Image 1 (cartoon, helix red, strand yellow):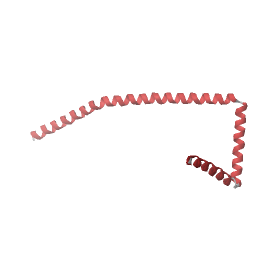
Image 2 (spheres, rainbow, N blue to C red):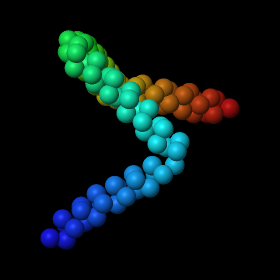
Image 3 (spheres, rainbow, N blue to C red):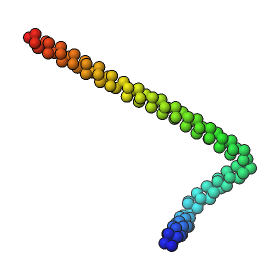
Image 4 (cartoon, rainbow, N blue to C red):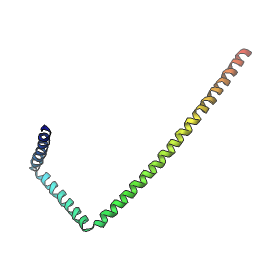
Length: 113
């Protein structure tokens, strides 16, 4: 029950805020201008529904293309990560072998002194 009072209060507050903001002349003019723009666009699209359909098709195609590209890039990155996982132990082994070789060489030089 209190939930319905909450939403009722929110709606009343929003309406009251809207009405109060319309007391300002600049705000009223801006609201009217935006309403005229929206009304013009809606009436245009009602008269030309094919444009809306075409726009939706284009947008859907772009989204599909973008998703495919992202999928390919994610796949490529996952592949490279897997390669790095395979190569990393080999690199560690090479570094350790190189370190051991330098240490052995250093020990040999110290013994010669």
